Amino acid sequence: MIDKRLFRLPGTKQLFLMLAGLTLLQAFVVLFQGKYLAEALVNSWEQKSLQTIIYPMVFFAIAFVLRHLFNWLNTKIVENYASKTSENIRSQLLEKVYVAGPEMISEEGTGNLVTSSLDGIDLIENYFKLIFTKLMNMSIIPPVLLVYIYMQNVASGITLTVIVPLVILFMIILGLAAQSKADAQYKQYTILSNHFLDALRGLPTLKMLGLSKRYAKNIYTVSDEYRRRTMNTLRIAILSTFALDWLTTLGIAILAVFLGLGLINNSFPLFPALVTLILAPEYFLPLRDFSNDYHATLNGKNALNAIFEILDRPSVAKDDTLTDFSWNQDSKVDVKNLQFTYQGSGEQAVSLDIDSLKLAGYQRVGVIGKSGSGKTTLIRTLGGFLVPDKADIKINDQSIPNFKQTNWQKKLTFLPQSPYLFAGSIAENIAFYRPKASMDEIKKAAHAAGLDDFLNTLNSGYDTQIGEGGRGISGGQQQRIMLARAFLADDRHVLIFDEPTAHLDIETEYALKKPMEQLFQNHLVIFATHRLHWIKEMDYVIVMDNGQIAEQGTPEELGRHNGAYSQLINNMRGDQL
Image (cartoon, rainbow, N blue to C red):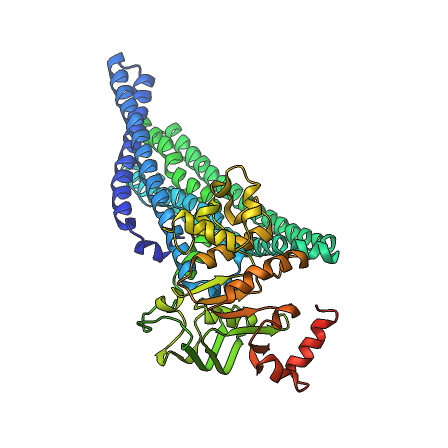
């Protein structure tokens, strides 16, 4: 139930020591509570003086208060640990995703990572709050009470000792069944998350193609499967809780019958029998609490395991092999024997296998190909967001293992299909690459990107606040803000475009074309696209097919023969335009 990897988290060992001390004190307080209550009842039954009843009841009240005080301290300590540790895990997860980048997102799925960093962390926090206290109570309180019961009556101690293994056996059998169901249910939850996010992203395209209603049926099927699996898990959890309650109640009933017969036969005094009967429910209580909360912690444990697997994955950190780098008209990139493989859960498929690729100066390089041909993977590899398995790369005659170089990425501007705009003002978003830029420089960049008319319609102008992900403004204006970022970052002379106009209508795209062409000047441009009019603006074209470069050269050279380029252009002029 406790993952050994928990002990590598900061503060876990200290937490166990504090909880062990407090729980041991709590065990003795519970013991004294039962002892003094039994003593008061026996004295009352034997009609002794009032003083002999009052003193035990006072001690009982003190023990009662201390018990809840220790329990409150336990809860506060664990809650503080759970809050800090879960946030620390969230930070580690986000840092891991930030370092690994698109490679991890492609393999794990956006929905899975979102589920882990949001709902998963909440489940982990709840898991921490429950498991440590319950486990410590079960490990310390019953043994302390059992030793005292043995001292009072050996037969009662033997009875309780025999019952516990039977209870634990049933817990293990039903717990394993619930664990299996919970594992499958959590996996289904992540699948549902991926489906949901994919549906949101593709909703405009699905509506345009008239497939939105058909896809709604797919979402319903996945959601219903998740509901069915959840109910199966709950069915087993309820069954196991009932079995545990029945067994512990039966055990206490057997003990009560045994003690009652002993009292009738005068085989032992009233006090040992009464204190044993009072402490028996307390003896089983930690076990029952642990079992009841066991099923509540299964999803937390699964989420923690999933996050640990992500955190334990090896990642390639940035290195600074590339030194004294700047891009100008004489700069060049030479790539040979580049291979990249997505390490997914299924069979490994080589996503890139590039024999030779050369980029130079202020070229305009178009990357074209069918969907799934490897355009985006190539773009992300050149941007340093994906690390190839092997490659022979030279930038300005400096050999580097990959493009995940600090100096390389400081010289490039990346414009993806879906712009990333964070919650803040429009001015802050434009100054993404240059946070210390002056307002005059921001306005100049916005003017170059054609944002003036849009900004003039806003009451707060550049101070207008936008939501996370660009909520509140259109896709076309989001792309203009991205272009303004690129204009402002005038010290970055490498532009990488990953189909930046793919989700825009043709009118909006043509409105953006003029400022984009202006931005192309004095830049190395790597432009992945499936739109024909952009190819005409390129100096050099790379045709991708199944992760390989099928053809490369100038548009004029490639158009002279009926190769992969010509066939793709013919398709783009037809139904696939």
